[in-house]
Length: 444
Ligand code: GDP
Ligand code: GDP
Image (cartoon, rainbow, N blue to C red; front, side, top):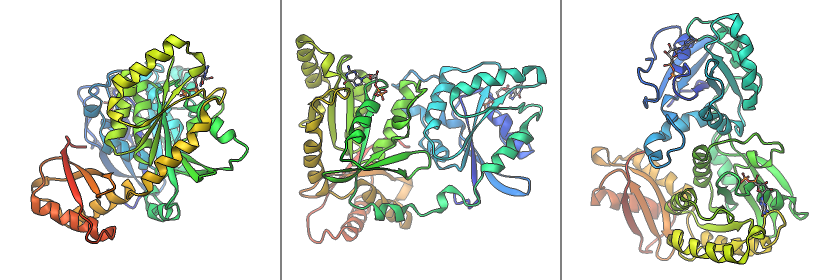
């Protein structure tokens, strides 16, 4: 996507009329209306203009799943690419269906969008005549501002919507600023994400951490447009808490499904050096917690497990959850498990010392982002044969430096040597032995 134009992404669950709206905006029938709802379509980008301004419209049709409860096939459903295009867009138009009202999936999408720093407009589609205009007010509940009534099919209201889009469209596209500058300024600052199931106590924990008198808090835009990070001054130095927008909002209308909270968590984990996995101890270790832990671990991100709401557990329950942890999170090895009450603050005094240890260990490693940047550049300069590609990499162990590369297929030995050389050069590893482990993973 080498476009230098600002981008407008059209998002929404299947069948609300995204493609129809895209056609309308483009003024031609270029986008294909999907025959079957929920069919994963490729992301489409089309040049468009309104009021003499040029921009790119992105249809993120592939982004959304048909149903949101089924985590098992999540990987198949989520197109990382469409997710990215949504995150990188300057303006997002969320389309909903006036006939259908607010569905669970709509709520999921809205929850995902509410944390965005950039503008989001809600287009209530299928308002084919004036009589239906009253239907739009229900959608205020999505928490994304006043909705716009449109009929993508007949063109009604689309002009007003586009006027509103133009009013918030920046001159420069979001991707135009060099995010490397930011990461350089922040070099050495540890990023921590707080993840876990809805209701586990993440917000309570976070607010307690920043409510501390010693901490000076400031907001920082995340590297993606929609995430607000919070930098907290601690005795360990500044720590960046990733994607905290939703956690600091006072009155949250957070009805995000587990599915979307998982997506959001994974995006946050990708940007963090350490993950705090908050588990609701009154519920126990669920499949969702397990999945999340596996993904964090797979991403090479150290984990601190917080068994929250410890205050609510009786002796029996406390014993039960210890067994639960051994059983279900055994793959985490010696990851720290803290028993805490975010509500009362009990047990949280152990968090910073624990983080200190993890950070010290982490500092001996090359940041995941840097590893990936080097590999990305190396592959761009000299791609592997037959479409083989390293999708993602982390440094697994520090001594000797061991990198785990997740690749879409087997990489030739000579190519691995090339990558090794590039890593060695980039990180001044000199003659230190470097190990590369390759794991196959189905594509992005
Ligand atoms: P998408 O999956 O969100 O891209 O939805 P489509 O653009 O494929 O539209 C889904 C269905 O809704 C199609 O049958 C469209 O003809 C219909 N549709 C789209 N916009 C409107 C509209 O403004 N009014 C009415 N009545 N139907 C519409
Ligand atoms: P989030 O969805 O993960 O951000 O969860 P919240 O922070 O909003 O917490 C969900 C609910 O659990 C709220 O009613 C909190 O007051 C409650 N809660 C959070 N932590 C604790 C705790 O340590 N003990 C008790 N008893 N309740 C807690």
